[in-house]
Image (cartoon, rainbow, N blue to C red; front, top):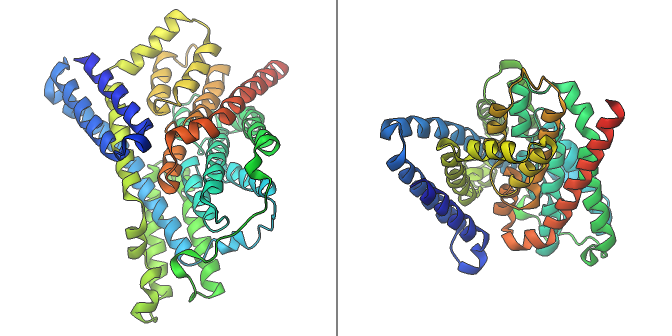
Length: 429
């Protein structure tokens, strides 16, 4: 029965990969996979149905935390966009060459991800690109670079990537050490794809062509309203890691609070306007514009992968690697590559259980290297990270298009960052 669980996952993953060719929405496949995998697991679980229900409830809580966060982040971005808030940034980006714009967007995504997190940054930056570039094919390529930059930027701070946050909360890393230890490797992970794209991508040789008109028809917001909602929107997203650091409560609670404050401010700001004038500016309208198909896909794929963790397959895989390979550097590199296919959260969680802190103390080579590998390896495939899945939904990126156009750049950047980290570690230790 456990073999059937793995078979269902492989078949579902294959269908998601060829979504464009089979013409079946990936959200439907993910939901079917999640339902079948947990059902099959319940038939074979030694703890019985009650034990599976307990595990499912626990995994559902973890999934809901991510989904709530995603919905709130997407809504905040939509509200900011509907007010023309992103013009605060777009009006200051003066690049006329596509190659120059690529570098600007890459660096903004890298550092914004370090402050926020990679998924939120991707949502913000992909939405921003719709206001900067008219050509959809060009936006697809920029979205791919944003995924690489956001994952690289998220790896070197405790709040930039969920796996780094897990290691931080678990006591495996500290803030100062991880920032000093991984900034160079993460920067190299970004720089190499940018250099290769600039040198060899013919599609980046032209000029920037902005959209003909502004989406959502924003014509009746003042400059004050644009500035206010932009800084309120970005401030809401930046508030979340601060809230978590101060209260130690889950990030989704912080972003729910921030969304409520933003909603209140929007109501006060437009309370005296006619209904037809303020209707498209409301948060209620923004909720209708968010891509719920992407949200549903998140629910399905996260629950599907959670079943592999609950039934012990992922921890068993990690233990097998440790027994067969023995070389920790090689194991961590493989974990990073595996995170391009399988969610890096259960992989890192299993690794944290394999290697006790008594044997591998805080800020040791193993933990820093794992934070880099798990954080950036997911860029190699579009469904390998939350940032990639978010971009996939927002710009309708095809799995194989990303694998052919962006995957090789991310792959080279991944190993270039590994080399940079190895050299740095040997010089400093």
